[in-house]
Image 1 (cartoon, rainbow, N blue to C red):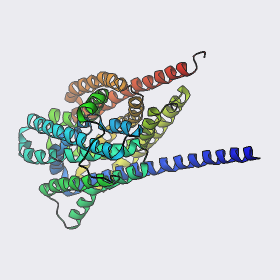
Image 2 (tube, rainbow, N blue to C red):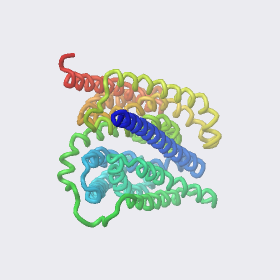
Image 3 (spheres, rainbow, N blue to C red):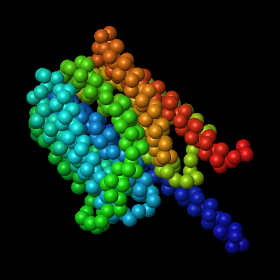
Image 4 (cartoon, helix red, strand yellow):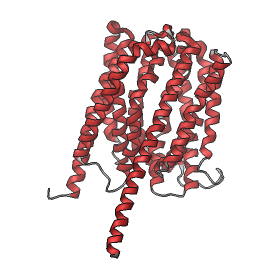
Length: 429
């Protein structure tokens, strides 16, 4: 009798765990939807407040701080999520994450200023002081994101999601307030962006129950050594996914075109909402022993992912000609073509996030590096050759081609990994 009761309790616990996991996935997906929704609202407000010309100037000022934000973190998201999964001392680990984020942020800020100085066209030189101000916010953002990774690794998704959503809401809320008071100038927008990053930094306090001054769990040199493979993976991934704006700035060198393209990016970002959520769980699954994906599961996730992404892309393609003028205004009509061209890139970019997260957790970040090493030249070569015929559209089309190539290579890498695990687990099969 006692055995029957024990079995019943075990089944009940399993059912409870499944429901808990489903609820957790649903909440994380809702947070991703909310975060990207806020990003889209931010894009609409910026377009309405600044117009194409000043929107282009704002994009130029914040181009490198945003393009290098994750690249400059030196692998911190996966690095500290991985440390957290090993159950290291929580306050010490959060101190380590904050110090690593500060170190990485200061280095990234310096690089941002240098790249902005080297690549700004002559008619946008007046943006330089504002670009420096935006670059100074990078350490604030990277400290928050590094500390946030601890909650990810500990599977504290309630706190993780709350911090993500609050951070995503800060700048759009400030823009809404400025809009209500009819304050719509470029300089104010920059100052609001800076203020939003300062306020968002305070979110790191959630989950920290001790002083930030004290002993750390991992010293910066040790963390840098552990992050070598992750740094290479982030370097290749971020160059491929962020270089399109840089190419528009350098190859086209038109402030209005940059504004149209910058307005299209938040719309195309809708394509990574669901895969972004999947990537969080893919990392945790890959990082824990005995939870690796089987070959059939890989094909299932890839097939389902493609179906969902294509369906979302088709729906967006149909409504974009009506939605963009309605949200941004008629002056942003050229944004429609850029948004259309970015949709295929969005399909692959989202799915690549999940593949990358899984392979990094499996301690095989070099797979992503190799894939990007092939894809980045595809983007650069196509853009350079096609600009004379396709003008600015050459860049998003080239990005779609490059990400498609990268996706095929990464799926093959995940499949090979699952087969290796299967052979080790069942050597006789």
